[in-house]
Length: 179
Image (cartoon, rainbow, N blue to C red; front, side):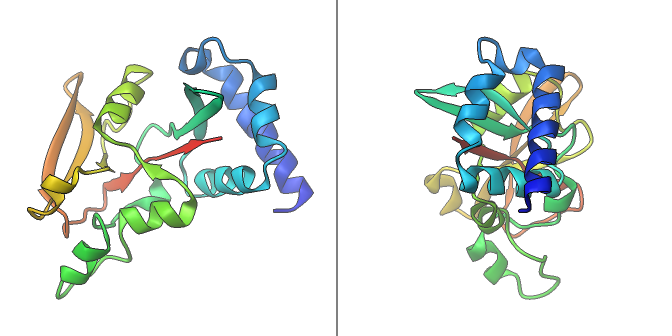
């Protein structure tokens, strides 16, 4: 990332942080800046999150770390039409998607949100009103061939299951980054 891209990203993140104070009560921008400005890897990951449509913002703190999450209204546009994981991708015989959510998240440097994290995000705003997002799936469910995804419909948050090899134009994933 160039110094200009870095400055633009920091400005964008700061502006988003200021626009949505309810997402990060009790956290000051100076604390966030101290966590990300010296960390080239964190800025690169935030840049990739932003570039793929995630609109990352701070949603809390864990220990001494600041937690960023994709806060785009809908599942990030640049991360849709993916099956759940590599095993699901390899299981498809035809009409394979371009990749999988688990591997795409790892390449971005983020984690998929689990069910509890997704519900916590939904408590901060209304997300996935027209799309859905793959969620980190417990191993016992994944070994049965399924995977979890969530969305918000009718004013409620729903978590469902689907075959892990499935993919849809309106299903992507949201990432979580601890810095």
